[in-house]
Length: 455
Image: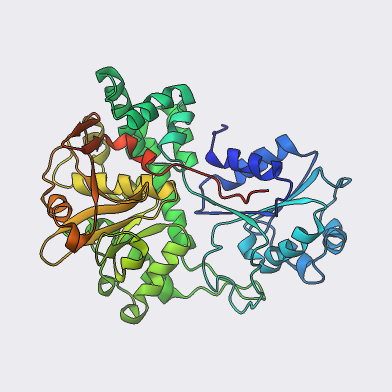
């Protein structure tokens, strides 16, 4: 099943840019990188050479020598038959390129030669020392990069068959600050609750579209999550022999399993000392960093004050941790949670679900997200830079007080100038200059944009 993704537009713009460099696509495993890249290549090139270093580790030694295109092609032709290559109409795809650091390095030469196009992708490109005992330098400044995440709500609606026309109703309401009709609001709320249960892994979304069965879909998400856990700590030496470190794997799995319990606590802050496993006291941060670099979790840091520029006010050792796909979190909860979500009858744990789905929405749009918390029990769910202003996001399942936000806003000399957007299970409204939006509009707080250089 073909899914419309944001990367489709990015790749089109990338190819259309006369000065484009080799493309490098990063993202969590099972986010749909390979499918989208291959589909694009088949539709826009006459010759496609696909190399997967995970499935074909024997291809790695092709890159042991010189890294110019002619040498690579000569070495590669012995490993696999190659069609007639044509300058300007041929693309090489390097999949799971983190397995072959010298293939990644070869993109530097490819950027200079410009004979063929190259698209590399990988799931663990951010993990330092992924290939043990390899000192290959990483190429800098020679690639156009795209961070691919699992499907966001906009992509989910595309998958359901909705077009940009239907999506424009949400966007227009948000931009004009006028509520949708009762019928439209009810429909988008129901769709959003479906997405909340399913998440954005393409395999899970496709299963749901084909079967309309949320329960079998949840099992697929759980299987994907288990597979990701099996990959935790996956490393190998230069001799291609696995070098699994049991203690590292135990710590990483422990860190991942703690996410729901910490989100359920009052201040939701992640505490490293709770990670179990041998040596966890000293290496818990490494376990968490591994999950972040592998695209499995996101960190949302606390701020000294919620004043712009937000990045200079970050408290590095205080943060909340969220799964990068809401489906992973829901899959980690007990059976029956989806029934409560779909019916809108979540219990006291609803705050965990709704705060997580907003974190999911903001993360997938690529924006920087923070929070603000003081020991005085002053707490702001999220803080973002929205159109140049420090903006508090108060996330509620339905109704709830905004005492902390009002305290911060009433004291600009102490906390800086701020504005407030409430996000809750209701239609859009504006009261006393405070904008309230439904959860399904949160993806519009950060507009998705490409990062391609200008010509």
